[in-house]
Length: 298
Image (cartoon, rainbow, N blue to C red; front, side, top):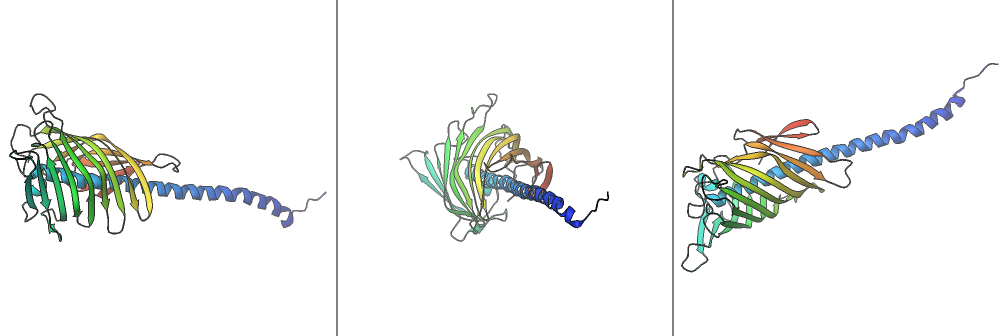
């Protein structure tokens, strides 16, 4: 008997195979699109943490650098001669040196520092004692403060948790907490950031100048970033101590691990931000799922 192969006989099995194949293809496309979004969110989260860390690290330098009565003097904006800010000192206790409130006023229109950035608004810090004294606390708030076009908000608190004695480590150590930190762009994009870091001086303790001071930074942070209507939550940990020099506005070495917090994500997307090997520059390398790319820090 002859078997006749016809298009009609082939049509039903081909259709059945197509019906099975289409959902599989669609699932792969959906997974690929979701993975791309998760990778983008992971990079944005890591970059945002790095940006927040850099801007609030700038505040640390400025609070320390006002003068040697309340800090070390000559760090941050005060280590870069400029016409701003206007500094006002207010004694809060009758006839006593402390507590004291220092206000840095960069003006309503702002002024350009030697680092090329425009600052405007006010930073107000209350010191309980000179910051090199164990137990001293400096609490900073912001009043219409902007760095370039980014509005800075929140509370920045430095507590001296060192012994104050060389030979009794840690001699000079500071716990720095940022509470309800927020960086807002004119576009409405924002970064919300809370951080707890421990900053320990590892070099330059025996001199009275800040240019040879080097600090080790450890700790963690958490936050969320909104960019173009998409919201991402993240948590970070310092996995290789960050190294900071007062002569450089950026972290020069160390690594931060950032994990995206998302119940909808199929897995945890992890980013590692590497600040380099000691060179003072605004470059860092971000690695996600084994793929690395260079980014520029603010």
